[in-house]
Image (tube, rainbow, N blue to C red; front, side):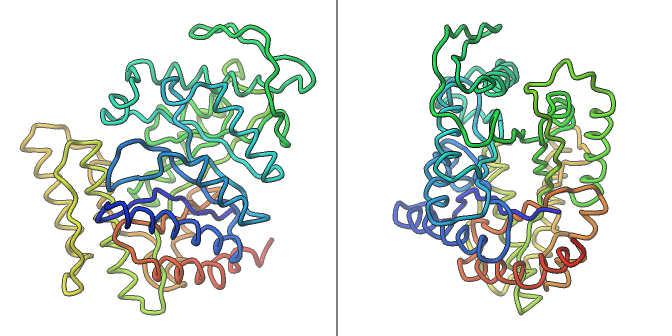
Length: 376
């Protein structure tokens, strides 16, 4: 079992001063994560999604973290792979450079960045994202197969005549590859490509177990014809929103409030919802509030005659690792039983204060992670 943290650089009050502070706070959390025994820090890539994610240049953030650490793995979770976000050669070059400077610690994930806000900002054709992501993965999978020779590519979308691909990464033929998987079809693609799955669902343990079954079934059915590399990485990482404090009830309230802000901000950009509510009121029962928000969301979907799927309220489900270290251990045991190879701790949410993030990381390092390392 691996333990990691994922960073969105999410925030209320997205002023320039607060933005700078949040980004620096994320670095401090990542440095503490290494000290506390976490295996990996992941950083997303999004563009123009105010409130939800200010992590527009994760390669810079991760390089800064790599320079401040020695052991922890450095995860692009993920690079937006459509060509107008990142040309595949540039994505490969940057990943290799970071792999060299971090002494072979990079994980490289792929995603589409498919919100209308992002695709319109960078001139990406939404209808081409799947095809461009696949071709990018194939280019990266081939780029350093002959580390002393030259790379060339003649695909459906790109033609690249022979050129040296520099620098060469420490991890050959390339850093481990992953894909962000928010739907079953992307999970199946990841399995067919032979790459790891980053499952970012909020619906809880039952959904994680169902997604693991989907991933395993696709692995069992694949022929290998669609592999993007000679190296196969069947690794399943599952999201775990968590706040763990000495005060169990306070942790539950802070976690539910952070997740409610997360849900509102993601709904704003992915589903044309209203601007997220930034207020934090210590007198409000946030656990009850997030349940009310889920009911309102379902009512809206019915009113708009949008089919209500089983995952329609997933981001409003607050049954996660909020509370005491014992609560977190119990939840991780359920995720482990559901088939998670890696626990992706989501701690940095927009309304969660820095001191609560740092205390959560310490509790995981001192009590939660050691519980699972005893038998290793």
